[in-house]
Length: 421
Image (cartoon, rainbow, N blue to C red; front, side, top):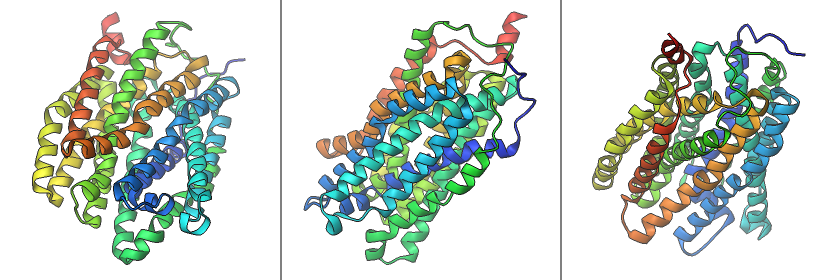
């Protein structure tokens, strides 16, 4: 039996969804800028670069299990409901974050340490893969039609806020702790702080309404251009993932490649998160008013023009102002486009397969491209000896994505109504 669509979504329900997205991003961002320390804890080596690459490979392992999580929990969200899937995914994310923080180092338990670290990253990836589909579907289905972009932007806003908090905690820890303590266990404190959100998030999610069976007047037909939507969605999400993880890698890049001070490098994550907190809701609002495609195209054109000069200036001057200016401008553009990408793809998917399909697209794109981005650009930088390598990688991804964007239909209700008139 179908019910009427929700009359509105309470702020606490938005907070419940944002909490899960924030925790997953907090975890990944924290891992990204503590990658060197985590590598030395679990993968000690005489070659610091080899240790870092091993740590980044473990970071990427979490993306391998994402498609399985999307398949299991995403389909659960389509069959039973968004709420059960969201409760399970959030609990598993919290367990993996706390588990990594409490795993002893290689020096303490030997080879069991890297094995446990990899297993926990696989569990984290499974949970995150099952989180995106149900949470985005919930926000879209609970939102008024003309505000879907803004509501879905709460997904990326939660991630940006988490990056801001994660970066701030990293900076505080780098100042409060001595070099040895920061190296050995400072990163563990950062993960445990993130895990502290688990009880609060679960309490909020228990009160979520169910949106799976609500009816809507503008649902897409059950099999409308399914393969086309999947292919275009995969390309667009892949470009967004590469863009985001290039930015999150800038902390490690600044410290390990440009040899900037740790506290300056950690500040980059704060700037990335701050810019995302502005760009995400602004991009969502603009996608409602001016269309999904325009809200993607404008920032991507800016990125294509700006990213190479930004990296050249950063590699040349290697100052805090150059690093933070680069982070702010690029992150503002990346997050501006992110909400439009999510809502534009989700709107094209039928409700009965929306959670699972979106989860698989998102997980597949991130498993192939997101998880490999930081490893690839670290390898490219080392192999070429050119600190500009990340810029070329990002530009190539954006160029391919813009070709796909041209083929994407416009789904914003406001623009579709204008065409109907």
